[in-house]
Image 1 (cartoon, helix red, strand yellow):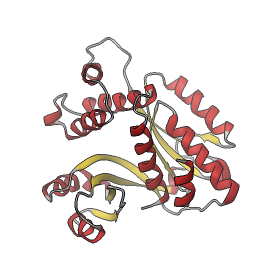
Image 2 (cartoon, one colour):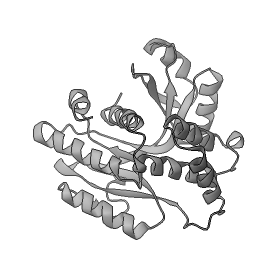
Image 3 (cartoon, rainbow, N blue to C red):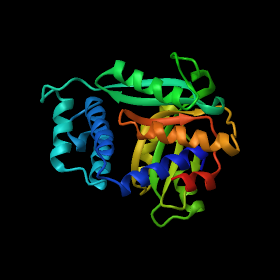
Image 4 (cartoon, one colour):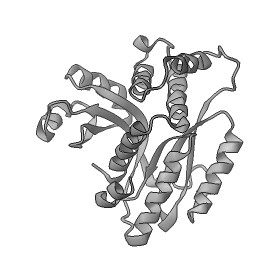
Length: 249
């Protein structure tokens, strides 16, 4: 798997082990809200919502919290609307970063993210400041089940899939053409693979490999971004050493 993908999965597992954190519950609730807003509020009729609810349950989010999140998406609780915003900038060692956030106060979120970037020697940029260094991709996470790398690769090579990134820890990443994301998810599910998440994200056209102190500071920076309760997903062009990632996680 790519350095960032490995980092992302480790962060997910780290969050699962520490599921009582309010920030984790907030992130999962926001994903439910965004998923419900994108289609039906019935999980059986909205695959993104169904996966968001399943992930929330896996992380011990109370049923009442899940119900409140769905009601909020439907405008049933009088709360401020949650919107999804993409931010861009440069982190330590000149690493380019794109992140997706969900917030009910974009001014507050922008100010807090600007502080995080600055604190780690980076700069939060304007829209388009680093987007040219990335390309859109569909990103699907699946459970390996009983499949080894060859078996998963064979099962996952359906129309629209660009790459299969096997992770022996149990969940792997399937990369698709953006327009093929939904169709690829359906074909993967039909092939017997359990899809646990999907997103229209980005990947760097060319990676950089920070080393030594730079690598450690990049990891601390990505960690700080992942910890922010408004940040849902982080993408960077850093090719990270797996041993360093494991040590920090």
